[in-house]
Image 1 (tube, rainbow, N blue to C red):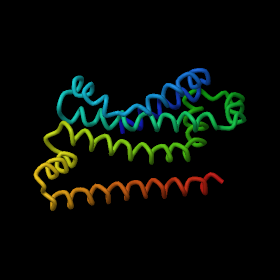
Image 2 (image 1 turned 120 degrees about the vertical axis):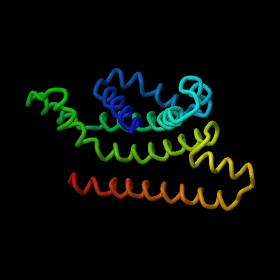
Image 3 (image 1 turned 180 degrees about the vertical axis):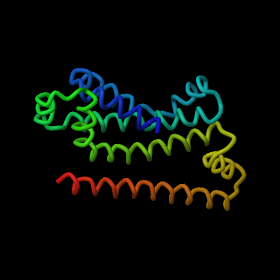
Image 4 (image 1 turned 45 degrees about the vertical axis):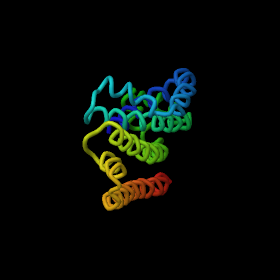
Length: 181
């Protein structure tokens, strides 16, 4: 949820302000290509061991790609929508809620699909390297003790949950254009 709200606000802000978006997009793409595992010592230093570090590590995996998708979604909205909003004298909040969000929803859902998988990966990596509980910890502990039954229980469970959520988001993504037309 942190990644979704943070990335939507970053993407909307940058998408609605053209110059800021043009300046920030290459920076976001560069940050996206940075291996996030290199930031983990910094995350541990700031948040310490525990749930907050796992949440922060998961969020940094998901914020940037969803922000890039959101930025692209806002940029591709037809200019006539903004002109119409100006003629109707919509406030900034009304513009976002009544024009920008409905027009950008299909790309936002695509961004959520990518962001979900990366956030899940980030949380699992966080649990694997500096945690005393969680599914990532169970997998690393099972690997360390050669506990094959535990590995064979946790890994398929993670895969099933990831596939179900991803398939649900894909289903929603494929249904959205039908409603828009």
